[in-house]
Length: 380
Ligand code: GLY
Image (cartoon, rainbow, N blue to C red; front, side, top):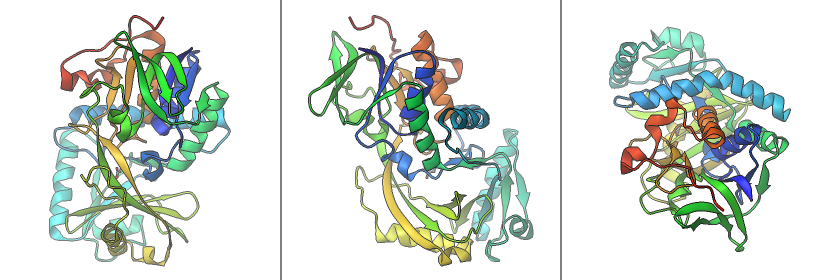
């Protein structure tokens, strides 16, 4: 019997397991393909200000709380794992291609200013001074100096090592069922029938979280939101993240590592359709080329589709839920990498003390169900 079983080995599950183990809890983590879900398709943007959206004040506050933690989180993770966690602090540029794109950027900027967020409008020349490879067709933009990025695959690799060093026992198997006894989550059953008993189960299976048998119907309202993303490689073309509106269509280009460029991403409500489509690849490459013409010189190394875990309000599900013994760390939608530090910290605190930190209080599943969960009455 362990104190905690974490179901899901993406960046969220691993970070929770790592931080929980550091509090002295015994932790097992179950995943047959750790990091091959949404984490695999992440671009690694840490960009709450450029992503600020009307009506998402609480998510913005959580995102900014997580962004603040990023530098120390990356440093601790690097120290613990001995692996690089490359954090880029070059800022984020948002540019537009036509007059309507500029109007949309102007509205976002007005909203950012209303909220007191740091962002500055730039002329086309100023945009190109920051990123000389931008097309001369760019009509203007804005810069958000505090929106950063991290290499998402380096992050995952470091978390694997840090979790192991902290004593997390990783079980390379598929979580087939949540074990529920006397109305309480008591462990996870694997595909071969083996049971991993635990006092508490953390559900961090991304878009699959609601599909794990044993999870009460409606308790974890996540749906798959398909994203297709490309990875290019060659001579570096950008210093920092460039997001763009290309006649109303959003595209982002995120440099990382040595000469890598992530180009994403579609946002598609198509259920679990995992196909990479010609149309999506065409749109992404065409839009990327319109913003950074030199991107056409790069090698197209990878195309992939994965599922973001979307919730009804696009914010994550954190903390206890209607089923005692089950803790949620899922539903991170477009913000899994950004929200990794805060999710790991609040979940580890909850597991160690029974108290969910205030910053996470608005994000329990009770906002949808009206039922406040608890962790009491441990498994016997
Ligand atoms: N975080 C970017 C995306 O989900 O496409």
